[in-house]
Length: 277
Image (cartoon, rainbow, N blue to C red; front, top):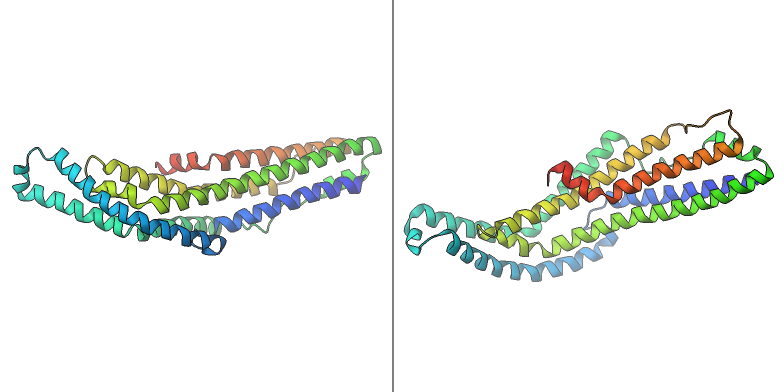
């Protein structure tokens, strides 16, 4: 029975380590490289079609802005007013035309922040969870009846860990989906910079895009903090029974994982609050 408990717990930790390693790999992968770049190629095609729409909207937003901000067309004869509206039009056209370069710069910045966090923290996905020796010893010494209960709980623990690991991966996949959608549709909201009344649309888009990119840094930091917690020795009473030691360890393990999952699920909100975006 002891071997069954140990095997179940080790299988659960192996599943967790595997998914955490996959998460680590995804966080260090750019949208251009993700899944071999096939998705990015599709996004570029959509982006090209949206660029034409964005350039058309630049003219409309600019014209609407001129009408709303300039009282009469007589004011346009004033050099400072004319230069202001013309410069706004030129800048808006430049932003929309070079929107892809702008998005890539933002992505590069976010990837640089993630790489810096990994370098300074010394975090490596290969350093996964390992079943403590005291838990292995306790499992080997557990009785038949109590061992059966511990084995059932270990199986439940493995199921819970599997579900939590998939929830984390789904969250990271969702981040990539948002990056792709934001990038593909970027020319449309960026066209709002052409007019003063619609400029808020462009600013809101840029803030949201940066917040989505910064989710990667928040998720990585959550993993770093979790790894520090998990690497510390479990708080277990050495005088407790073998069954109590096993249950205590599994309870602490699940509790820490739940905190990590909750933090990752709220990464978008945390990214907005931390960056002020």
